[in-house]
Amino acid sequence: MHDIIEHYGKVVIALAGVLAAVLLTAAVVTIVSDRTKGAVSDISYKEHIYDAIDASRPNQ
Image 1 (cartoon, rainbow, N blue to C red):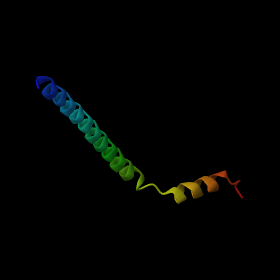
Image 2 (spheres, rainbow, N blue to C red):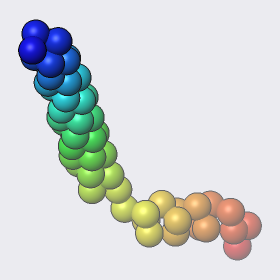
Image 3 (tube, helix red, strand yellow):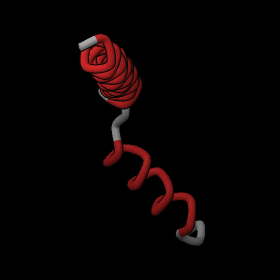
Image 4 (cartoon, rainbow, N blue to C red):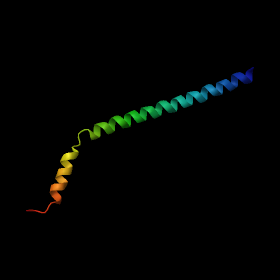
């Protein structure tokens, strides 16, 4: 009986470790996603493209 309890104890500890890893991964993904969205939300791509096109044209 003691062996069964010891085995299930190890299983519970392993599952707790897996759960902790999943929660940590989810937290990191959420933080990175939020910061990335915040960093690129103010970028005006069209303005940069038009500036590059205007800069590449020869002066008339």
